[in-house]
Image 1 (cartoon, rainbow, N blue to C red):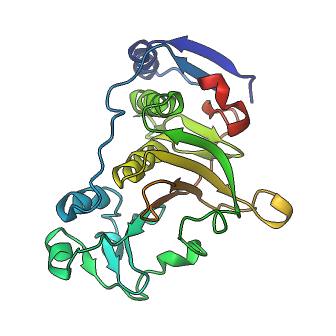
Image 2: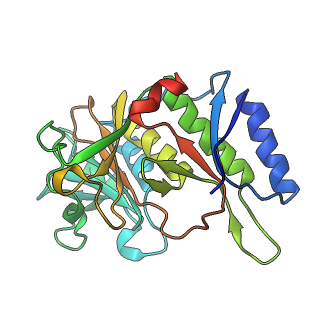
Length: 262
């Protein structure tokens, strides 16, 4: 893959450049690092945790309408969690204190999934503690409204501006490297927003690790962990499995290089 290219400017100008590239059907190649000289709107995310109706609307955004058993957010009383997934991405948190069965059903949740959906099989222990997070390697820490939050949402806007289908019906977008795996940057940005709406102002982007601290093999998800919401909220986003090595991709700064975006 080609060497990194660096671009700096206002969000609107850079987004417009990718929209123009879409119109011209120009191929985006190589690794791309962006910095923005201004701040995006919409970074002041407000919590909806505890409001059944708003939580229902939020978690419904992460369901998979293509499959019946994934088409609804769920309450799992055995594991005491609210869960929504589309089969590739998943968001979850503790059941808010005081939320009744009637509240949940009226808000669009399905009650007590039991073993119908083994969502917990991908998380050994979902409680957000240092001990339970020891098998996750931090990629970056995003705080609400900070430079990395701004960068992530800006990259998502650029990818959205470029997305298109060519004459042959092939879909084109710009993915993003987070650590050692490639992800749909819009999916990551949406999940960060979702976990923030569950009451978190600090989010850890983490990769699963295996023996002796090495990155896990295969296609394990990124864990998007809310560390200060006190409700064990988390999102998971699966990496992109198939891509061309010459295709363009953004590069998100890892934790040891996070100062580059500050």
